[in-house]
Image 1 (cartoon, rainbow, N blue to C red):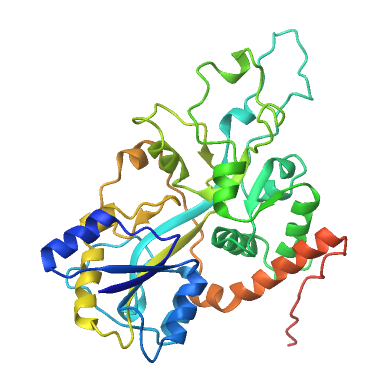
Image 2 (image 1 turned 60 degrees about the vertical axis):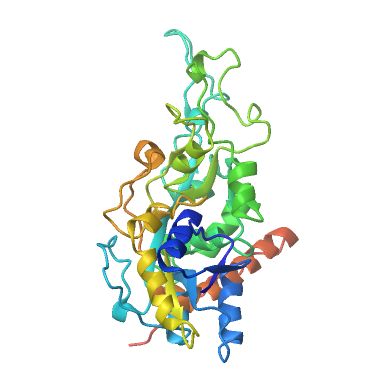
Length: 371
């Protein structure tokens, strides 16, 4: 059995081993670098498919994969209850997991320093208010404290772009700020672009460690500032599952972590599996899809993104139970984002290049419909 995926999608090794032991079917996993590379390979090998199963197709490319006929429908033998709105019509693909992409921040950075009752507040030490949504990224009080993945080179950056387009649509009211202008404002106020999500979260973001033993305001080192963070930043774009991901890196289950989730302006991205059209082992591929919907596989779908099982009845890991955050995300329409995200990505790149060269930002694209 040949399975095609990409480096950002986590396949639980223990579940694959159990599948082989139960069925005698050996699973060979081939990984491309990016989701785009996966789809390109499927299209180029359409006449002679290189895989029997593709897994890790996300909401952005779901409609393209289905409309291009790259996968064939499959009805699972014993489907479990799914998280709301992940199901695909006509069983064209099977949901496996999802993430809620959100802003993450460092709580200790936003703690007001303690002062005596007769002492005036020091405005230079006062932190900005806790970020409440995407508006923070182009707020002068927050922008230079944020690092985000670049949508030209990072898939998580494209998820941020989807969230920005929803929050600040180009086709919005004339007086509203469209997202290309918002992006330009973000960059001009100092928001940092990282080439990958891993660099943004694991290298440039300051969160994830257990908080100091003493309250920040009582710590001898004083309040947390940009200077005390040593160049790292307190605001980034991650997921609602990032606190649980960082908890996995700690020895044992920590009592608390210095990372929190902004619950507004999140976006839900699903990840899907399907049988490749013309697959040599199509009948066996169906057995693997059935296994992907079973509890063992679903329980192991967590990844460095903080992914969650597509089934709604799977017991959470201890890390998620303790630190996971439930949000009410925007659920993008696969047909709408699938038809537009590449054009949005091109516009993003133009805005970034114009900023770096000092060129004025491109005017917003406005479509006027005459009566």
